[in-house]
Length: 325
Image (tube, rainbow, N blue to C red; front, side, top):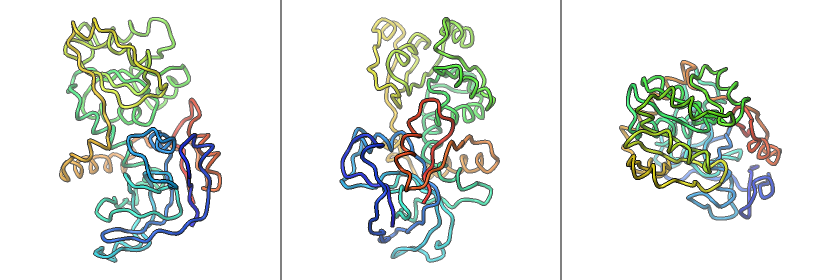
C-alpha cells in the first residue's frame, strides 16, 4: 500500500514522503480499514517533528484520525463489521491507504454525515467538548478564547452556545474576524486592533471572565490574565506561536488565578466508557443535523503529501486539510 512515511523527525514538508510499504494485518480485536479521508491536525505535525507528548518509533506513518470502510476483521471481531463505514481517532498510521484500529473504538457513521465530516468527527470535537466540560464556567458565565477561528475554536462556539455559556472569540487579524462572523459567531474581537481588551471588558462586565482558553501562547496568551475575574482560570491547550508566555505575578496573586494545561489524549485515558459514549453521542447528533462546524479547506492525494503539509501550515487557511488515497 501507499503511505505518508517519515524516517526521521523534522519539518513535515521535508521529512514526509509517499512510499510503498506492507499493508497491515488486523490483530486480535482489531479491524483493517480502507482509508477514505484523513485530516492533518496540528498535533499530527508536532508528532512528525518529534515535539509532541508521544513519539512514534521510526520509520513511522503519520496521522491519527480517519474515516473509511472496514475491509477485514481480526480474531474475535464480528464479521458483520466488514463493509461498515466508520470513523476512528487516537490511531497510528492514518495517512495510508489502509490502517488498523481497535474494533471497539471505531464509530459507525450514519448516512447523514458526509465522508469529509466523518473524517474529523472525533478528535477535535471531542477535545473541544471535554475542554468545555472541565472548565469552571457554567451557564451565564463568560469564557474568553484565543485562536477562535481554529478547529477547536469554531467548535467551542457551537458547544458553548448549546449550553448557554457566553463566549468572547479572539482572533489575530481582520480576515479571521470576518470568517468567524460568517459562521454566525458572536463577540468576535481582533487583538491586532487598539483597545481590544477594553472591548472584552465591556462584554464580560466588572466580574470578568470565569475561564480563559489559550492556543496561541506568547503575549497574547499572557494578556488573558488581565481579563479574568477573581479565582478565574487560564487553560492552555496549544501554542501557535511557540513563544513563552510572560505571566505577570501581580494579577496571579491578587486575583488568586489558576493556570493549567489541557491534553485531550491524557484526559481520554481517565474518561469512563459511559462518559465517552455520551459525549460522542452528542457530537454525532450535532453533526447529523449539520450544526457542528467541520469545514474542509482542501483535499490532497497521498502522492501530494508535501503540498498537503504546506497547505496545513498556511496562516489564515479556512477549513481542515484532508488526505485521500
